[in-house]
Length: 368
Image (cartoon, rainbow, N blue to C red; front, side, top):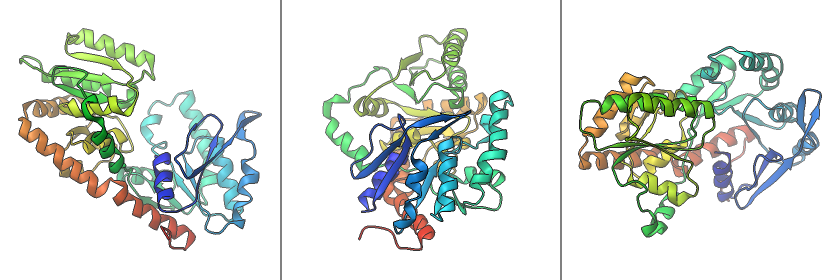
């Protein structure tokens, strides 16, 4: 999202710079300046060398805004403290990092985060007057972490022009990777994505019927023990012939091919700040089943399906998906694409960002 946002700002004629830790970002969009700061160990901290002195120069430049992404690194802590001291306008986007699902098990890691938040992070972020939330759901949760601070909701967005250009230039390269009709999951294989629920719901939905559909699970194994659990679950449920683990897929053309030839897309996340894969799938007119926990409160207005991350609910939704005629499936995909155009494209969301930044600077922002 940072890369897409900076790309949009540059397209509007705004000078934009990405500040990052060394090794975090390798490439930036054209017309966007990229500055990397090495992390240097100081006691238990790894702080960015040179960031403080760079930020101290910002007050000399008119209309500068520091937009912080994330909350758990010393990088953001240093940036917030220095910029606020220099009276540089600061905006914070937690990007779902303060979602309580991640703290559901209060082990050592979670306890350490809570201590860090209360003693270090929150005192640094408390003076920030405006906070960005991706969804209304995240806004409500952030109000408990950052009480009394203004919170503005601006959704994630997708570059529809870029997606359409890729599709137009793909030609015959978009051949199907699987011959049978399939339900698609695409993302990292991690417990937060709810893939275990998807496998159970899929097995339940096809139980006792002659089903032509397969479940295609695509993505990198970010949690090997979880992946082993998933494959064991497939064997236990007796659906080895129906569930395919494809592994990671690289390159936009292969990704588009997976979307274009799927019957439907399913992302049963336990929690998410929207999830760009949902927008990507919808942009190519693929109907999408996802969860209320993504914060896509209006998804069903566009023909998508919303469930809670529970096996029974998800199974009922999948039975509905498998019962669609091809005409209904196409109609739902078209409606979802129209919803994305109206509410989640950069053409719609970008203007919200320009107005939001203008409230921080008191100046009108945009193309001259």
